[in-house]
Length: 205
Ligand SMILES: Nc1ncnc2c1ncn2[C@@H]1O[C@H](COP(=O)(O)OP(=O)(O)OP(=O)(O)O)[C@@H](O)[C@H]1O
Image (cartoon, rainbow, N blue to C red; front, side, top):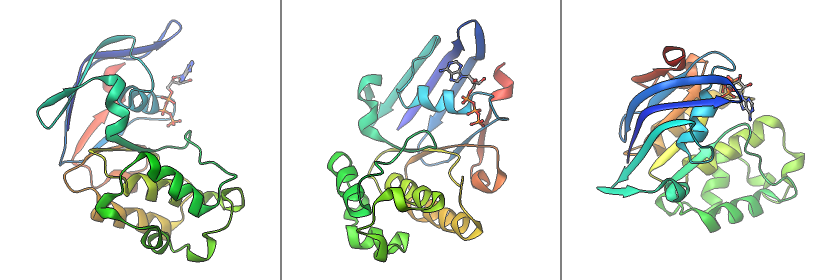
């Protein structure tokens, strides 16, 4: 998977959030998208995911030597972000079943293996609305990391996680990101220290 941004800019009403982003993301090496609160990290991630249009410029996706239209890119990505909510009335088992009706399981990981990965075997039949914020964040991360997609998009991946949760997230990074294109939006160094490539939104104001 390769994504090329050419002269990408986005404005809301008359305010430009960023402009003139020329950048290429390639699978295999993780990338961090960095900037202060409100700088436009999530906006850029949503443009890359195809959920939001850019105001100017072009974005091109190539996977296995084939160009992919932005309308079809959702099939190639998994995303965990604070603004993407889980279905709270579902039990954890139902959330897993529902998610994997739409995404392929990475390495055919089973529900029992996912519950073990989450250390939530005893919560399998509990509705998500009774989960703590940190537990929900772990579920979001497990679903994204364990989906068999070429692209893995993570926005503030350790929000609501305690130190144990942060270590668990870093274990997921080591185990489930091989050969994938990983993008992390963050302003906390422990979330993106493993990313050698860094795009600073402040450079595109
Ligand atoms: N739908 C919208 N309409 C108008 N302005 C918006 C909209 N969405 C985002 N913005 C503005 O765009 C700017 C960038 O927001 P964005 O959420 O991308 O920042 P961020 O870097 O992800 O912030 P944070 O670190 O707080 O998550 C902010 O000034 C925000 O108010």
